[in-house]
Image (tube, rainbow, N blue to C red):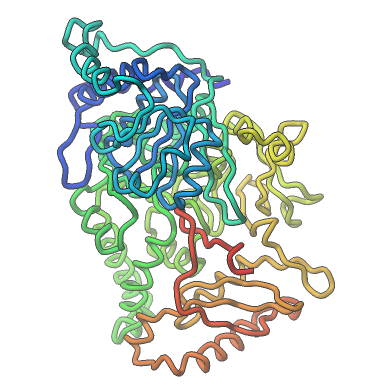
Length: 549
């Protein structure tokens, strides 16, 4: 058990940073930590009036916003169990999650609420707008008058004025259930991951010791905060450190993101690989491939100067003030990683999963090794299930403070995931070198078998495919015993380079021949099939593989 209490971390940060800006919507006004405390106390009284007890479930459904963050903090510090729901889910899935989680209250964006049917969520007693906390639906008698009572009386216990020295939240044990997170898994319908206050405390303590943030630092939050990665490291950890967090409503285009970075100038950046990969492909790759740069870059002295300028341009494009750029959620394209290493861009790659709230491994950018995801965090034990973890790929197993207590109402699935000795089976295949660096090789469920039982890791081949001309993204599947690559072409570059779309088949045939030259015989690709649209993705931008079998 982590010694530091998660709820008290939040309380201490609010009291210590009372007058500092805490939460903002992009291009909106800022709320100080003291103003956030006022809204938390208000919602605590709303919970009491509307029959929510500690341990009850409160669901949150909306884009990243200051009010979403306040509703989350209010639920956690009250002792309720927060159920964050991704906005990408279909209405039927939302109904199912709200019901399956036994949520009694729902905060939702009004435009999403119009797609929902309260009659299909019969355990919910009240639905509030997440934009302004007004009642959208209720089964509580005289609900509006109760809300008016709260507005008039919520500060009575504080003498009508809330100050930092008066603020105190109820003690909530770290053993308490903190949230149920319904994952955006790529293999089918999601499960409800049960995370405790201790799981979050473990992540917060590790981040505080290894990721430099101080009160007043700025953070731009654009990853979905309903997902563990964005929630823990773009919201909760910075909040516990007294940072000013600005929310972008959703993951926008790279152009809009760069404008936001230049305005906010964040001190720590968390991102999925897609953002860096798009910027690399659209700007850096094109620039370094053009004459005369393509010639000058071959001269050692000039190459060093050119790389230095590219590094400065890239750092400045993200605001120029960040200490580190942390990538997670999916593998980074090998060619992009290789180039970023050459120019000494301050990035690192971490690894985790919702079941660990989410962190499993990390190391700072100066010590990061190519193709690795860092080393196991000090709140966990990690091992590879193979006879020789340094050379023989096996499933990565983890055990410790970060690991969930199970899947909600799913004893069998919990037993499948966490064995009798307490090891969580991640489903990821990996190697661990002699210094403890972890190298993820692919998913256990996606691994394919060659004609003589050889292991084929689709992710490795897909990364190679994505580095070939005019391929934006790819998936490897097995059909009738043969390997087929499903490819979404880079249509923007096709137009830019003057390559007509009718030449695509010839281009892809050449790509297939190129990649087969470097692949073992058992993993050669028999066919490239062109997809005219981007592949369906989860909110963390992983391709939904199960849709393309």
